[in-house]
Length: 364
Image (tube, rainbow, N blue to C red; front, side, top):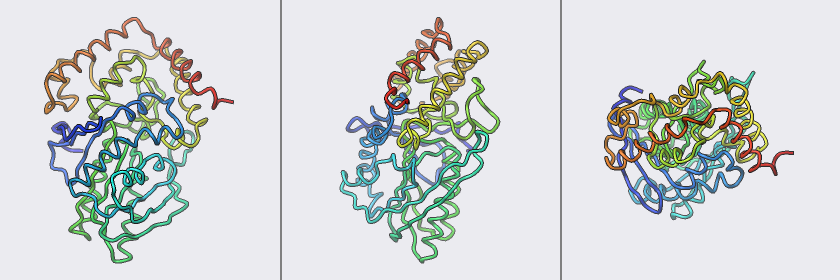
């Protein structure tokens, strides 16, 4: 995205334990927010959170954001599009119920990644049951990595509305996702407005940060990460509270992905366990050849030696309270120093033991 280096976050509200920031500094066609809350921070720092708890972790942040959007007149009649599997983690219907937003109907589509030799080679859409609610707000929750699933599903839905001579007022999208989604949604808005000039655009709510994905051909410093799937901080914008909580513990920053596979965490827990343990066993096996400082720089998203001014710019925090920024900067310096006597082998062994112990009831 052009102009990303000039974007920054500005505080929007703090209510009921939810911090909300709005993305500013560029000429966006759409609105982009980051929300942070205790349960979503726990979800994204602890892959031990599985099953129904994944869904429950998102309720408070989602409900509070629904209240904000309703209060600002951005949602009236709602229609939920549920992209099956991972999207079922998002408590959109429950949050609407809590905030007295009428849900007129719910649409369903299936879309799953197809893997060949460990790489994504396509998408499989096997089912679609769509409801049409003219001039409504379409609500969607899903993970954005490459964004291919979202684009394909949205184009399908928009074509369905056009075929029936109807249109949407706007689209509200809740996501744990990467910044590539911003490019995709900006382009989609341009395309949609050709036929629907009055389309208000997308309102996108990111949980805990706008992350980055490893690019094609880049397996990271560890040599293990997967392109277009694994999220990390580099070149993204992280909610200050999430940064603070992550760096208050030794190991969360080193996880393979900020969220892992959302569908597997909820519905195929053994598959999720295998992915997490495969990663940490891979780190254990390669611990002696991985440069820990390089890996740490990759995960933090900037050189270990960085001035306060450059750190603020790297984090896109220059419109936030300086006292908070200074505190976070010093916390990060302390975190880096605390790792001086810790090896990747020790970290990997600890995570394998912790994770296996926490989820042993699912391992058989």
